[in-house]
Length: 360
Image 1 (cartoon, rainbow, N blue to C red):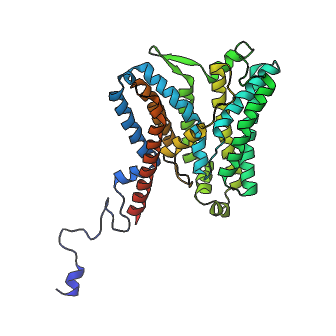
Image 2: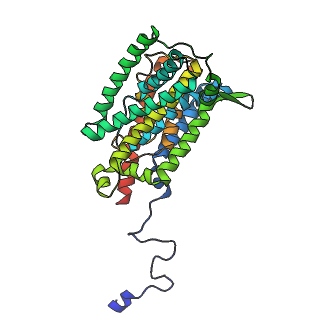
Image 3: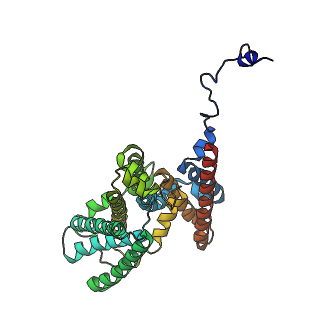
């Protein structure tokens, strides 16, 4: 065969890849792999599997009121898991998040009761305190360059001790006084801790707030310049600074967002139970971080979503209540959480490696 014959295309065969086709340089990955590369897809499938499992293993879960209770438990974790996830995408994490929730609730309660003022005054003071805690964590991080683990571990210990010591000093007890008969309590409870009826089932308002906050966080991450900054500082801080990303502002604001979440959950706790135990909150920070990790966020930063932690928190609530509804020993709850955390971490690792390999 001559060179001229080799150059001619075969009869009826188009000379190029044609519309809708791609050569090796522009080959697109299969849809299944592209979906698996999304950080929230794996945890969605996991949450679905856990739900189906408990629907069969624990028949009471099928009742509407039981599902409402599961969603409520999930929402109290999920509201805090959202800002924690954003912080992790930004390359940091906060060990003081759990006790910061209690610090906020204690502040609002004691300011309102001891100063005999409208509870909204206590709520606003608590907001300032919570944002100040977040600002302190972020400021210390950018000023010292120390790992967020060390800084927030220190804040955790400070708040844990201060919560107990100040409460005992002010109230003479380890818990705050009941504020349910104070001015403004009913209105604050309607905002932070009320319920509404859906088909004869009582649903907590925190479920609505949880979904609203998730939608807002998703919009911020995917549709705003600030979302780009979060991913940039989490991926490579120095490269982000070199292209003009305000690293200091982004880091501090992310910690303040965690403070904002702690304030909201703290207000829910206060107006749900009218009083606050000063020793609570220890260990909750690990639950928030685990929900974010199960939701697809990496401790190394630069990767994750706001939707993933929603499903991660739902898995926590599902397991926590599902064990009770199944009549099992609730002592197994933490063991289930450990299995879910390790499983989600391994799945995320496999997905990222697969996604990276298919790009080559």
